[in-house]
Length: 242
Ligand SMILES: C[S@@+](CC[C@H](N)C(=O)[O-])C[C@H]1O[C@@H](n2cnc3c(N)ncnc32)[C@H](O)[C@@H]1O
Image 1 (cartoon, protein in one colour):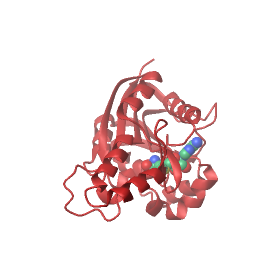
Image 2 (image 1 turned 90 degrees about the vertical axis):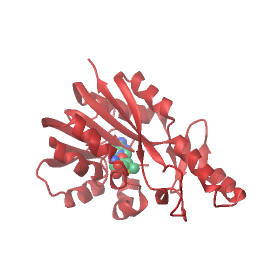
Image 3 (image 1 turned 60 degrees about the horizontal axis):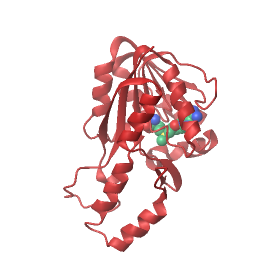
Image 4 (image 1 turned 30 degrees about the vertical axis):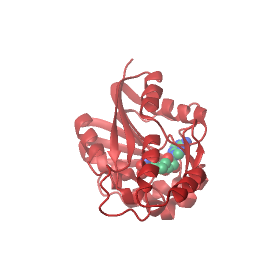
């Protein structure tokens, strides 16, 4: 999607896009910010959208800069900002020499989701280039395992043929991990895959954990008494070394 596509979504962003900061059941994003933050530390939230993650982590840092290439989303983020330690900038992370936003900790939630592998990697490299040596990166990405689990769980209360045709429509490419979200082919990652990508990009001590969100976000008409563990995004945290 282009900056213009995201601009066009800005008015309906919270209803059309899963903002993980709004539905992190176990509060793992806040816990990561608490653990990695500090009164003298600076954070940058790359691809901040309407600023959900930016606002969530701001209490744990001296300053947080939210960066996005959609001017309308940056306007929406600014309009919701109440604290003085947050600022926003419009910038494109897909440029070869993208502007750097120096920080101790980089957050990047559900941004490495486009179809093109080279573009995703360029964005990840640009995020990592802004982090000081010894600082940390927190990448949140959609989970391919969670998509498969959702189909399995759906079979518990929907006819198998419905689930099969739903999966057929939605999965654009299994080997490439592309699953349509709102009709747009969106990169989903296996746990090993995101760990391997970040390790290849020279992040060290990469750990990957779940950011669980409610079933209602993944399954229309999910029964309230669903026993299965909820769906999740992957959160990968690592350290930048020289
Ligand atoms: C799914 S939204 C996630 C927003 C936010 N991180 C969140 O979790 O709520 C993806 C965001 O990445 C931004 N984005 C995508 N490609 C970008 C690029 N090349 N440069 C800057 N921002 C980008 C989009 O504008 C959009 O706001």
